[in-house]
Image (tube, rainbow over all chains, first blue to last red; front, side):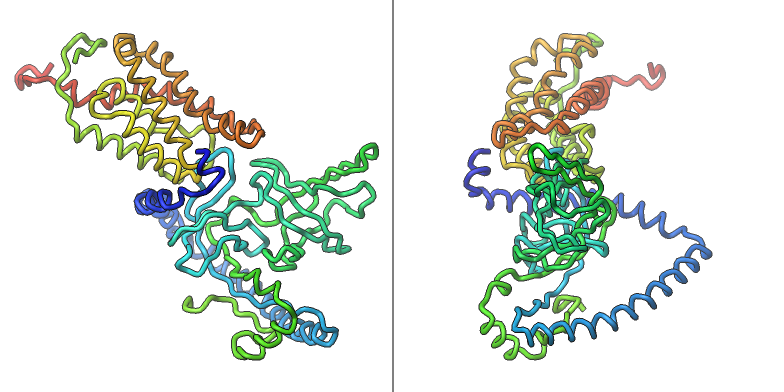
Length: 282
Length: 174
């Protein structure tokens, strides 16, 4: 135990055990999946029609927004180029399926069905349609373990959407609200503020929703405030999610280098064009 | 072996059944029920049972390997379950003469500390390593109590093949 905790040298053993265990886990997941498939099969026609209509409307709205955002993104990149700021990095996303969450009362993790074979890397963020879910913390060949936002001392650097104030959100363990730590009393925060990833760590791409502030306790004596927030993404609800194949090293390069590489690989990395799916996934 | 509950002599055990039951318990543990503290650990129930009744077939080593599997499944520190399972297997073997002679209910009471040890061991280790005590994880006591309550059921199921009668008289089935 100590060896694993301090030196992390037992990974080969873990990999072998995981290789034996994973098929069995898939077998045991099967009954649940069959049950869910069965209950989905018996949905009435009226419900389907209703759902279809709602989805069509949503699709219309979203495609309108998408057209607009493409335009805005190109404009933004051009402006950034004019101001000689660093460009936003395009990245790919990979759809993943959440297999199960391991019965471990101490940590909050989930296991997903993609691993290093699918170009997933250690530290890649996982998100669903509404916001960030967590980060890959242990990688196998065909699966990976993801630490959720609620995990104790799991930190995400964020920015308040309203005024751009930078902070870090910390997980406080299972069932507890997330915390914004190390903020002075006078900081400009309100209940209901949305926290977006700031992207300064190079792990999370900037501008994705993480949490909403739910409660603020200002403590004037100690010049500190306890700020509690709720994750935006329903952490324990859905089965599908997206992995961002966001490369932190790409972020850290010198501006000249970035310009060269973007001009060299023109087709894939043109600014303002974001590929939404990894190669080979189509 | 004598069945102390009924006073009869049991049939010899089938090793295949032992390993089959351990495998089934492992599969039950892999069921995606969710991250709840109270879900009973079927594997430790099975390991303790066979360590008490047939410690020549199921030893500390078996407990260690199965514990390693559970570590990987739970994404815990490698060796956490492996150590606690083998510790418990040792305790079960050293108590086995005393425990089989008791009535079923007092057996369950005797095994409660063993199950408590398994349930709370990860919490204690994390407390030692990181200095934080996870109060939430103390719901493991409920798990231990549930496992102790399942003990009579485990005896009923796992001893059933050995309790079959040797001569079956078809004219008088009882």
